[in-house]
Length: 87
Image (tube, rainbow, N blue to C red; front, side, top):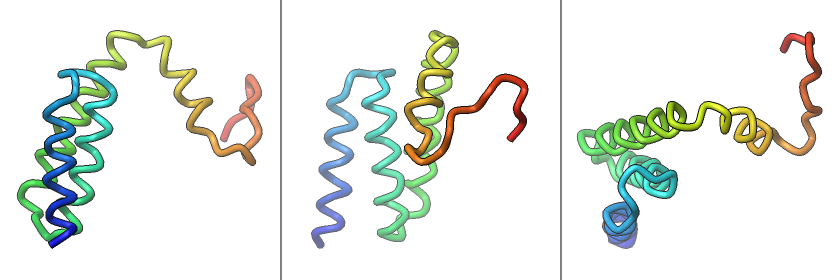
């Protein structure tokens, strides 16, 4: 019951977010995970597809932001990539 309430809250938060924002994409991503956990497998893909669409639009609008986001997403224990070094 509480998990279902959590999904409802996440849906409301996503609905209340600015359309096309990174915040909305994050909330839709969280909603997708929660829906899948609840076994609502028909609804979960729709939420994640919306999140991916938003993130792709944001990436197209700000291609320079990708490098900054990769740095922020790198675990602290992982060294920074050096030019010419393949991973």
